[in-house]
Every structure is written in structure tokens, then in C-alpha cells.
Amino acid sequence: MERKNAWNAYDEAALEKVEKAAQGYKKFIDQGKTERECAYQAIETAKAAGYTSLEEAIVQGKAVKPGDKLYQVQMGKAVMLFHVGKQPIERGMNIVGAHIDSPRIDVKQNPFYEDNDIAYADTHYYGGIKKYQWVARALALHGVVAKKDGTLVNVVIGEDDGDPVVGISDLLIHLSQEQMVKKASEVIGGEDLDIMLAGRPLQGADKEPVKAMLLSILKEKYGLEEEDMLSAEIEAVPAGKSRDYGLDRSMILGYGHDDRVCAYAEIEAMLQLPAVPEYTCCCLLADKEEIGSVGATGMQAKYFENAVAELLALTTGKESNLALRRALANSRMLSCDVSAGFDPLFASAFEKKNAAFLGRGVCYNKFTGSRGKSGSNDANAEFLGRLRKVMDDHDIAWQTAELGRVDLGGGGTIAYICALYGMEVIDSGVPVLSMHAPQEIINKADLYEAIRAYTVFMTDMGPRA
Ligand code: MN
Ligand code: MN
Image 1 (cartoon, protein in one colour):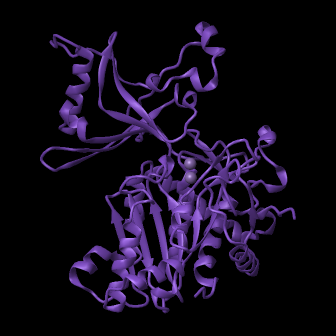
Image 2 (tube, rainbow, N blue to C red):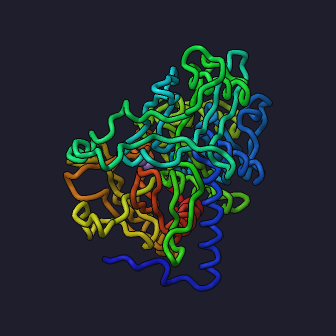
Image 3 (spheres, rainbow, N blue to C red):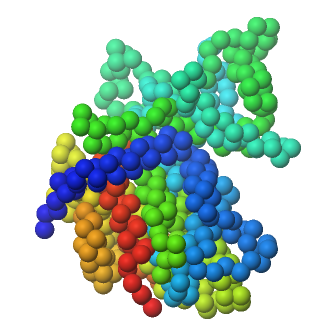
């Protein structure tokens, strides 16, 4: 039952493809450090590959036919790509879905204050983080500010070599006797994650002169007033680019592998589809997974269902609620999300026979969840059986896994939400080390196998209905 290491099967040509995928992916995460930046890249890539706007097609009442490629965006933070197949959509789609939000530190709506000649931004962290990992490191600020006049100001500070970076300080070890005996969850408190932004007074300012310096820079460089922060979404993320990792360059160290590595693999897979696939293929890039898939851009919102309804109407020329239900129920989906890679340094957190290993290919989790599989989508055996055949027929390196040892913790993805429609769904992803840390680790072979797996999933699973 042990799975082989994927690298053993690669010839020179395959190694080149592995590296090409890795370099493309590194560029994607270097330019995509927020859900908005990832959504933007996905749309630009899709447009370059011939995708057109579903929204425009709706307005024009344009008939959609097999081979057509359409994209739809939800509030700039979630994206859907549809590649229309030969079969009626009612017969089901092959869907790959990932999330493009990652753990980070969000700037509060009323953030700025000055304390002892330092200007700070108050923050509220987003997603599950070990807070102590986010201090004493270079952070960059990414996001948007929506001004009252309707303009949207894009902010990226800390990524260019010449840019300043910001960050959160930690206590010196010399004075840390009390801190060092605290529980790891209490070493750094949520309200202690304040970002240092300035340290020099503005000449002539009578009160809070360092904060005045900060505000004068925001005004001068970005045309922003302090009040504009009330309608801003600024995310503090690790500054700098992803890097090849390991002396053999077999891995990638970077921010946001969870879950942008699967998002990238999905986009790449969409680009490799035949001109007219048999069944309609769909790539879903959702937001807010890290906080429960909530909100208008999270998977629990109805934008996907709405988009499929619109697509159906444009392909069939009529509206049918029943056809929509059938289309969703007859679909198959890979909920593409990273899995916990087995870490020999923390071996006891895993049950080794049912763990995902770096380098052994794309991973399938029949279920995730915690305790007694609580909150999990437990995929159907029949679906897994079919998947096994398709993966093996195409020599994909794949493995099965659980998210760690029973009763130790757990996690979830968007799988259970899409399963509500009655479609077949299974979790599938790339194993990650140091998940949710500012810099996570993946193996290049697993990314490559994920792209291959997602492609054949969309082309070769055969009919469901
Ligand atoms: Mn994830
Ligand atoms: Mn996550």
C-alpha cells in the first residue's frame, strides 16, 4: 500500500515540465499575496487564453455553445471559470475548486496610534495562525482603500527591493523569563500584533508628531486621509518572494501555498483542456475558506449556483430550476485544498500509514474533519474507485491521507458545502509542511502531479448521469 516517490519516474522531459510548473507557480504566489491579487491573475490568465466575461454574455443575451470559455468574478475576490463541453450542462460538470485566501494579519478600520515616538497600526489576525510566528519578520502591506468618491486605491508596500518593509517587534530574549514560560498560544496576544509604521516626528506637528508623519506620507503618496482607512482592506503578509528550497531545489518555500498551490494547479489544468471537452469543466476559486467560507465571497454564498443558472440559461435558451438542480447534482468535484504533509520532526502528530508524504504526488482525503469525522465531507467509495482507475490509467502519482492522527485536531475545506447539492466531492491537494506559517513548504513534484491529476479528472472521469 506504500506509495512511490514521484521523482523516480521522471525522465529529462518530465523534469523540465516539473520545473516549468514550479517557476510559473512561484510567479503566481509572488504576485498573488491577497485573494484580490490572485483573482486578478486568474482572470488575466483566463482572458489571455480566450475566456470572455459571463456577465457581459448575460447582458447581451449571447448564446453559449460547446467550446465557449467564460469567467465570472464575485466582488473581485472569488473567480469561476467555465469551459463549456459537448454534453448538456444538465448532465453534470467536472469541477475543481480551491480557495485563494490565506492566513494573514488584517489592519483594523481605525488602526493608527502613536506610542512613545512610534506610530502603529492596530490589527486583527485572519485565519488560524500561531501568532508568535508572525513577529520579528519583514511584512508587506497589500490591499485596497475605497474612497468616498468611489475610487479604489491599490496599495502594495514592501515587495520591491527599494521598498521599506514593516513588521511586529518581539521582546528581547534577555528579558523574556516571563514570556518563555507562557503557553505558546499566549506568548503573543492578538492585541499585541501591532505593526510598526513610522518612527520619526513630523516637524511642526503639535500633537502625535510621528503619527502625523505617517499620515502625511499616506496623503502624499496615496492621496489618503486617516478616515479613508474606515473603508480599507489592508492585509499584512510576509514580504519577499518565494524561493527554491533544499540544496536539490526540489521544494518551494513561500507564503500562501494553502491554498494557492491548488488554485494554480486548477488554472493550469483548465488551460490544458481540449478545445471542446466532453463535459463542461469548471474552476472555482473561493474566498474566506480560512474563516469558515462565510460572507458574500465565501463558498457558502450562492454566486456559484447563480453563475451555473445563468450559464444554463445561455446554453439552453430557457430558464429551468430543475435543470440547474440536475446540473449541480450530476456534477463531480475535486475540492482542491492542501493536506498536512508528514513531518518526521513531528511524527507523533500523524498515523504513518494514512499520511501524505512530500514528493509522493497529489493527495486524496476521503474525509477531513475532527474527532469522529465531525464537519467532514466523507466522499463516496464508488467515486474514489472511479478516481483510482482514472489516476492509475494516466500514471498520476497519487496518495491517500488523513489530516493527522485521530483526536489530535482536524480541519475542513469547501468540500462539504458543494456536497450539499448532491454532487460527488472529494478533497484533493498538495501536501504542505509548516501549514499556516508565514512561509510554508511544498514539493515541486506534488504540484506537477496535481496539475496532471486535475486535468485528467476533468477530461476522463466519464459520464455520471
Ligand atoms: Mn486550505
Ligand atoms: Mn488553511
